[in-house]
Image (spheres, rainbow, N blue to C red):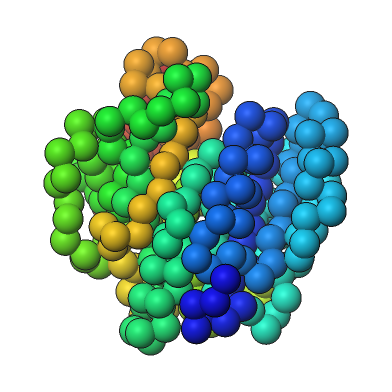
Length: 279
C-alpha cells in the first residue's frame, strides 16, 4: 500500500501472556495505510511463548524471548533491535488496536513539525470479553493534578466526543507512543536506553516524557490519531492486587526522585499509605 511516506516506522511490542490480544494487534497494523517497515515483538517471561509460533514467518518481524524483565527494559530491548535507519518508532501495547490510518496520521504529523518528539493517540476503551467498544475513554494524554498525581485524562469518562482539540501535553500514554528516533536519542539515559529500566511497570511512560520535554521536544495529543485499548485496569481500586498498587506508588516516588519536585511529599505519603495501610 503506497502512501508517499515510505517505510518510515518500526514498531516495538512488549508482551507478557498476551496471547488473547497480539494477533488482533498485528492484524490491525498490517491492514493500515502505512504498515510498519519492521516489527519487534519482545516476550517478557510469558508462562508459555508458544503462542508466538504462528508469527514466526511474519515479514520484517523479529521475536525476542526474554525473562520477565519488565516493560521499560522490554521496550529498550525492542528499540535496540529496530534498524537504525528508521526515523520513527512506535511503542505499542499488544492490547492496543490501531485504526487503518492511525500510523500514517502519526508519522505525517511528525514529518510536518520538526519540534514534535512524540505523538499520542485518542485511546478509547475496548471490552475484550464482549469484543466491542466500551463506550468509555481510556486516555487523551496524561496530566498532573494540583497535588501531584499523574493520571490519564478522560479515563473512564463516557465518550461524548470531548477533548477534540490537538494540544501539547505534559505526558502521553505508553500504550501508543509514536516517537521521533532523534528525540529518543536526545533524551536517552545512555545511547539506546530510552526507558529507565528501574521502572519495571507503571509510570515509565511519564518518566520518558519528562526527559523528552527537558530535552526541548514537544509531546502532541491529536484526536484524529485513534486506537482501541483493552487495558487491564480496574475501576475498583480494592480489586487491584496490593503488590501492583505498591509498585505503582513506589514508582511515583521514584519519578519525583528522578525529576525533583515538591510533589514528592504527596508521592511519599501515598507510598506509606499503600504499603502499611493497604489503601
